[in-house]
Amino acid sequence: MINPMQLMQMMRNPHQFAQQMMNNSQFMQNPMARNALQMLQNGDTNGIEQMARNMCRERGINPEDVIRQFNQMGIK
Image (cartoon, rainbow, N blue to C red):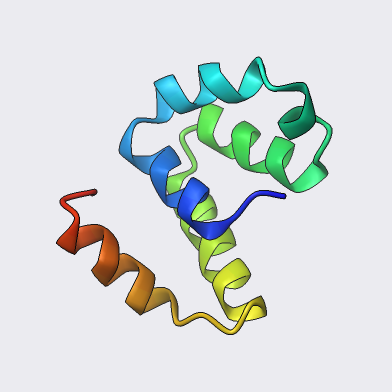
């Protein structure tokens, strides 16, 4: 299952992430993951961000807290 942190990493280095995930058969069997990868390939970073925010909310995680954590770690 894809998690919000993975989606945020997509935006950091999208081409490298896409290559790694396309070679991961378990990842490619997940419809949500395939959708995220397709958005990434199309340059739809807003769609990826919205998906990550929705997944955070579904799991009871504050998306702003995740973004703040990424910024503190130097991940943008």
